[in-house]
Image 1 (cartoon, rainbow, N blue to C red):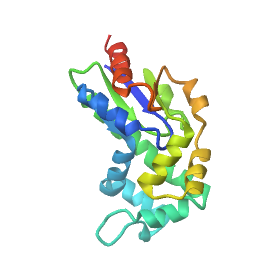
Image 2 (cartoon, rainbow, N blue to C red; image 1 turned 90 degrees about the horizontal axis):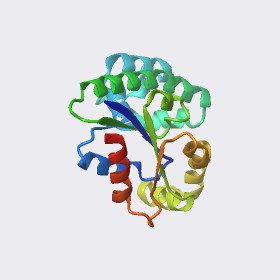
Image 3 (cartoon, one colour; image 1 turned 180 degrees about the horizontal axis):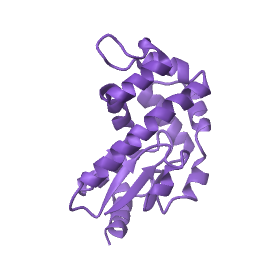
Length: 194
């Protein structure tokens, strides 16, 4: 069973593409969703996060204090690195366990925005990039997250360029509104299933 990574910048439509793969019976692991779950439910990870960010890292109900963490990690790159240093290994191990538990499928998909930036793309048999024009991505994120243009542009600028990512991927799915997403996913699915 192949391990396939799927990546793309913020607002590229990775989630939509993953839903299409899921309708084909392919298990999809969302690294962001699992990270959020692990940061709340994994006792060891909770301890590490509380140690780094203080007791304010969690609210009284036990949920992650996202506002508190965001205010720190977006202002201090070292704190962001500390957070990633404890979260990424936990998510990686969780993803491995999840992959190994899958049965009777030709491949699994792991979806994450930073698979290339953090070097984990090297651990996959194949990589898929969801490529979307930057202006489309900006408009989507502004509408989806109610975020000002400058904030979205800053987030995009902080990520590796799509052109650099494409060079490291085996397949590119163009989410530009011109080519059929379903047809492209079906083509990639056929290649991965052989």
